[in-house]
Image 1: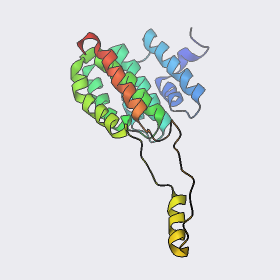
Image 2 (image 1 turned 135 degrees about the horizontal axis):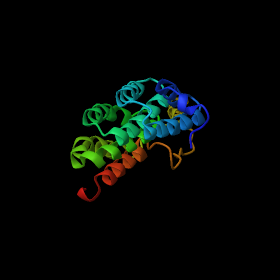
Image 3 (image 1 turned 180 degrees about the vertical axis):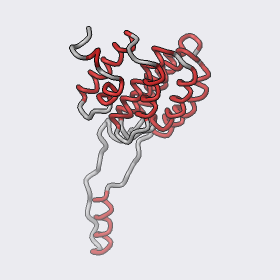
Length: 194
């Protein structure tokens, strides 16, 4: 179903929406891109160029939109040179500080693995597995309050007992979840070959 005025949207307008700070605008723009690709309204060169440029943006919203557009472009045109350019950007985006960017990497890896199979896993698997190993154990940081109390105790001669500090179950894991998702996406993309 095409929304009113959507068929007149330029590819640049759709990409502007993919970079928007409002989630609903980004979702609608992605849906518009998918429909336009299905209808053959946009050219491969223009979409792929904008997807690559958008992934290089500073804003996380743009990076996420660029990755989503890249996954859709890979589905639509399946060009090996474009996949290679996207895969060059993946390692940095896999470790991005924003969860939603890291999560969007999985769709790109799945699409690439569906086309190229195990060579993609061979190229990206080490990066993903190294991140999983690095993040598997949560950091045990000494809280600032505890350090302050230790300094006070050494100055006064009377130690103060501090309450233990616990990390929330979801705190401190950084990119572990998204790297596990990327590994799963590559396994799904490779299918039986994995």
